[in-house]
Length: 181
Image (tube, rainbow, N blue to C red; front, side, top):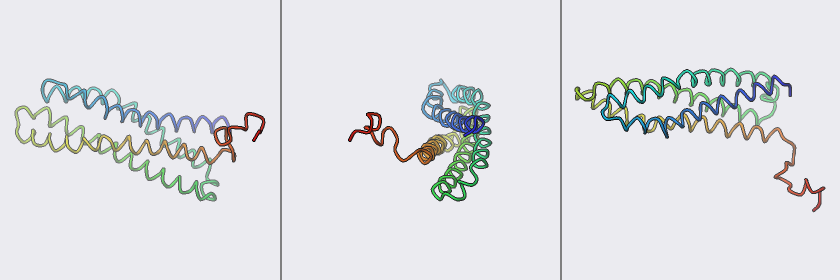
């Protein structure tokens, strides 16, 4: 493995971690914190501020994650084609990446519409109803991205296990004791 392959793999893992961590933080921390605002308009402003600050970082992480994933597949094209477990993992990773992209995009669009509706909800009954609909959708949608990107992390761990030798330190605890049985 070359230094560039290591750098590309590290980029792929770190950017997935940022994508996963940022979306999980939003679901666990930012979105609930935004509900502490005094009125719908203030809640929308809190949430918008947090997501607007994080958005460029998340976008860069997603872009680099996609580019590094393509580089990894190109670097391992022979293994990807000739080793069936790797082929399955790559197909699964591609599907999960697509799901994560779709979930991230849907959450972004839904969140923008929710913010707009929240700003008008105090004075507009239709906007108040729309806010409830969008908030209900966001309650499950906000978990879709961390679920998909978490699945990608699991698949990366599985692929890493495929690359190591037959026995690792944990597989054979006595290996570090001079092969006693």
